[in-house]
Image 1 (cartoon, rainbow, N blue to C red):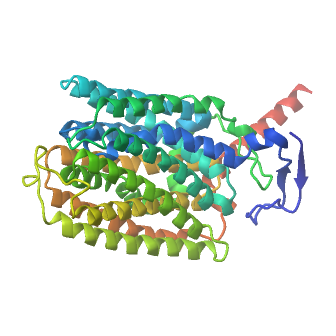
Image 2: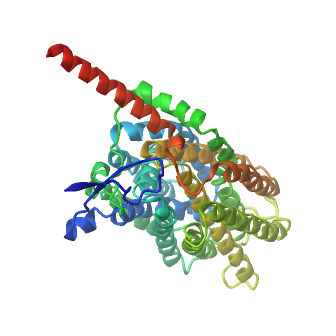
Length: 486
């Protein structure tokens, strides 16, 4: 792959660099394969087939089971182990490379889906479901960190919103397909749990997802559309990488203001799926709700992605616009949901009660709430990733930020899923969800005001400066050694 040097900067938005190396992109089919969008699409299909199926299963409420308690405990185990390992997954990603990290991350999903099939056949296999959940949390932490690192580093600054939008649309199609499988399998059922065929169909899809990372390009061979090369993965000592966690926070403490937003980003799923979808609807209606929820996410990610990457406005304006849209959606959706939540409790809708069906006259209004929740969720997650991407262009720093994001959001999810498992009142979970979402936006606002700029500059790249210093010291040492030898 030939390269050249362009002293004009080659499309970089960094005004502090006098010269930027610009490389010639490959041509023909090789150029298509190594195109950043192609690789991001491949990452998206990994998430389509693995986390997408997990979302389809979770979105049914109770994992599609009659009693949601075992599923709630298993999901708590997923996010508890996820929260711990995601905090360090960025350093692992930097050490072994994003491609290997992504491959390792796919391994837990098939086991998790298979455990639900086992419990459908052997009702006393709840322990297997919980154990599988804990193992999935470990592997999922690495998958999502590798995904975040690749998605945010393969694009130019101007493309970050569009790349996130493409990824989110394909990823959510996985949950849509999984929900469609469930709805097709249970369209004539009025029971409160899914059939074995639903689990088998989802299981086959998750196994296919393991093969895609083996077919992907190495990140160190990738060239962005503006000709700049994606940063080569660094392989320093483990001590240096763990120190990088500290450097990332010290050099950019504004990331801490996004932690409440991260914490809320998986917290709201529990009320939506277990305390609304599972509590009020039979399996046929739950499956259709699930389908509409994930389909609406594709629309939501597209809407917010276009706004966040609009060239008509400066990046700061786009950031504040995205924040304003989230604020309006938060209050519209939660005020609407409150009017439903105040009409039922855990005692009034036990698992064996008669649930709402798709032919119930009350159903259309209720499914529209699920659609709006899907829009809000997609906008929330897309904006969170966009804000992370706006803070840095350093691949390894983005990996650490992505690890922070998934660690904190999983800690929130672990807490609320356990609350649901021990029977905390639905209203308490709903109100805590609403308050946390609002708090996430309140803390996010000063970060946008003080930290988001119209372009990312070298002074923001604490890890990059650290590594440049290390490289300079090593280079100086090599030169001195050569002088001594001569």
